[in-house]
Length: 433
Ligand code: DLL
Image (cartoon, rainbow, N blue to C red; front, side, top):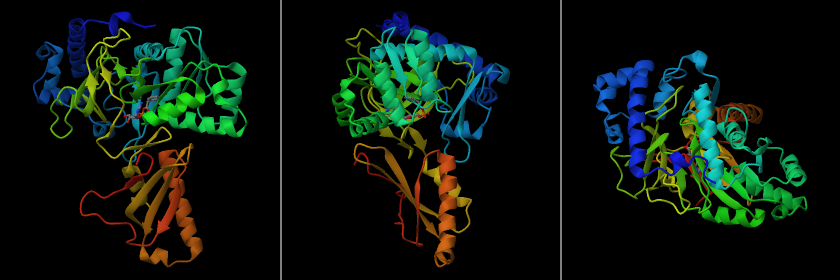
């Protein structure tokens, strides 16, 4: 089933016309309503009348995560704060999180693109979905919730965690669809087997997995152990949350809903368009959002794009699975972690050095874990054990409160962590080596 045939199956020219018209309206809207964009566009002399077709997007400046940080909390908002009905946050690069907000119409848009997402994965009205993405400040749980209600699914909003309870609910209510991170579904399979439950024996039809990178071997493992079709969902808080792009049942790229989220693929070094079909950084413009619309937002995610019509009938272009990042962000159990967040914590703690290394690994079939090695001053290192333990606990607590995930902290002697002449190797990610 295709949720919105009009927009998902439009001819390429019709789509370009819609995108061009929406871009013109967007430029007019932000020039009038958002101080940051007003100044930025005025400084290069661009107004709505300069936008004739969607190709004129190249005249507009990029927006980055740094812009979100520098204008925290409300500088990039275009809507009046009284019209912002919901806010979420994701990780920022240092002290402040990235704040996003939604007006009533933005929530309608989110419901619409999530209904498209669920149908694209193969959901049908009347199916039951267990939503095991976190509800709360993370956009996963509520985004799926809005879309599921919009398209007429029955929702079991388990949120993430409490695995024993998740498994009981699966057995009792036999949902057809599960939505959670790929690492969590693998972890649940392992837990189920330990409890003597065969995960493949459910009533499963589809899994919708995303929020973190995952590989084709992981897909095969999930499909085999759960006896379901495992599909990939992509999104980011700054753009809307989940609901930016979704694989259809052909599993041949993720359809990006480009009538509302206009994609460009650029060479991250030059900012110019990447050659067609080649890998580059995904840049997205939110064509119709109200609270915090973004022009040419640099996602830092590396993908390629395919504009051919898909066998499912949709004409919306397809992005590849996410192939990497152009920055040093890592994702652990669906949570975005910037090494700079850890550095920021260490700078505020006396006795530590800003020399650290983060090791991320995955237990076999299990959840990812993080260890942080931190160099401490000579003087501290020769102190009594109790003081070292106190310091270690303090660092652990502060890092955990900033990252919202548990970490193990090891204090190491000065000059233990390898120095680099170039970009220092802050992260050792053993999961995909
Ligand atoms: O992860 C939104 C989301 C929720 C997507 C539920 C899918 C499902 P953020 O926390 O802002 O938002 O993280 C966004 O996560 O820029 C990617 O680097 C990464 N990411 C998201 N989906 C995928 C995916 C949500 N399918 C950042 N594959 C993005 C790889 C993904 N990476």
